[in-house]
Image (tube, rainbow, N blue to C red; front, side, top):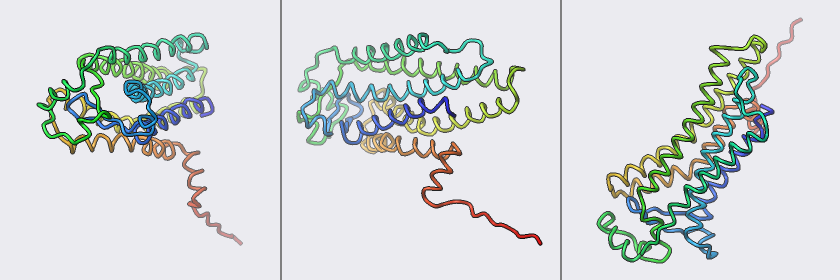
Length: 276
């Protein structure tokens, strides 16, 4: 647990950034299935450029994925019997620098094309025939006219992160269960495996909360489906991500769970029997 403190803190900070971006700083409203987004948060009110804010919102989601990769990479490196681990600081620096740089550059390509907001808003009325008044105001804009590029970048990011996490998890399980080292005690392996399982549960709950709205967004773009109910549902799911992530962290790890119960004075009563 000691070696995972930093990555656990990192993933919580990224969760805070995503929640703050979605709920107060940027507060995007997507008029699906169109690529038109209106911004209603504090940062748009301060006059920060539209495309910069869209980039921050998308990069916040990318950071969530990378923090999950970092968490399982940390557990992978902690298993001494694995021969191919990211141990050296220089190797880790190169690995994460390339990963973050590729993600940052890929998101930039979405914003390189020039768009005519007024013309495209009229065009997308075929997909979104009854928009609210904000649709025609300056707070709403077309963030990209290259939906195909957006879909390609999203698919590439998902494939990269899923493959990395799958490799770290499968390799860790293999060397803990199938081919354990004789130099590592059974108790140590059991602790490492239990902690890996707890991390997997902790990550799976909030990950599904992000995966479901992402899948709905992709579905609506592909099928050109217009449903305000689905729009609202996706926003609610994104907003609950941070709460569920914190709850998963507390209830899957015994030290956090016991300390939380102690804070709220919810502890198991200890009964003592005096034997004469």
